[in-house]
View 1 (cartoon, rainbow, N blue to C red):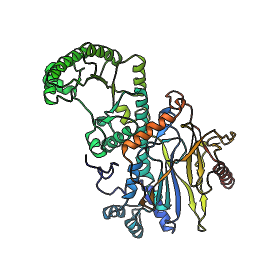
View 2 (cartoon, rainbow, N blue to C red):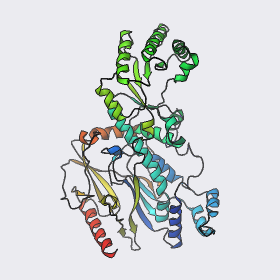
View 3 (spheres, rainbow, N blue to C red):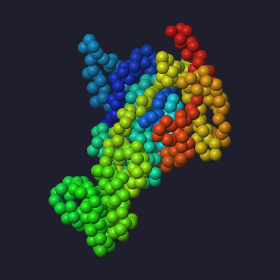
View 4 (cartoon, rainbow, N blue to C red):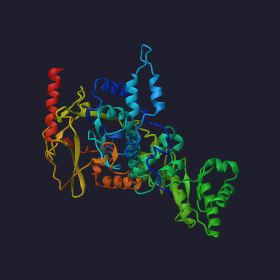
Length: 493
């Protein structure tokens, strides 16, 4: 297979994506430019506040597409011409011509650090850090959130489904229910990172280089009228890809017809790969189908199940003793059905002053969860005997103040220091002043990382019901800086 750029950006969108932003980002950039501050160095952090699906973690995905977007950021002549015609509320042109010329000449020169895709990430810790001219860092906020929020959400959902499947392969079947073409491609990519074995989406398979899988639809059987003849016709066309959908009419009769054609395949040196159940009582039908297949000598034939599955239904099927070998999961995976958004945010952490020092910034809120963390932030992950223990957020400029955690949402709690035998920084550099210093990883590597980190996470945090929160805290320096800034802001506010 030819080596493609496995990020899905260049392959899906040939033109400029510079306008993939909210208007207020450009308005603020114009404000910085007009004040002569557009080149002031700033630090922004992309984080999220609550784990999705009432779970205990998220899986970082969308990093490679985000970096690819940043690398190719250019405002074309067409982009500038469009912006030149935008009116303000009085009917005048919104943006000054000189600012539009600034955009036309803009090249992305920020430094970008991020966690590698497939990394487990937890509330409040930076997933991406963007450091550079504030106008540039501001403009890219919306696109970064769109790319990382959605793919991280789907990757997390996929990991939960794969966990419920208990070793049985999970196939992503959701193209027809996805939120548009780009949503379908991004979801297939993210689901693979989260542990799905393959996708039914042929375009995603081509662009991303991930396995593709599929059988046939009910319409194939309906076209032929007779189910047995339909299976025979399919076997004649694709004798090495025979997994028959058996529930168009009567499911168990469909299994018997599949067995008949399976014997005919065997007589010609081929094999029956399996049958697929797409409706009805999947637990009961899978048990009966397995019995029929085994009694007929097709012990290697797989029972594939689909039909609006998710991690909770799959768990229930296991509890009922279902005999299912492969799960096809569509709508509830690619749409992240029970939680439509991750809720990631992108907040300013620090500004470089004229004397070269960083000035930490903070956003206050009546809700403690929405108060931002100040500084140029890093994350240190602590492990003990290979198991994830806790994450500590610290300021890169101040250095790591030690493995003592201060609670982020309730700073009145006493700090604590978890026992550990290893500590590693999570953020790695992808762009240095706009120039690539690390290439995108193969999706298989991101997928392997997610599986390895999930295996290192406590089962108490991985469980679906009332998971134990994974400890994430601030080190002493960030905690003290944050407390001081809160007091100062409230005193002068």
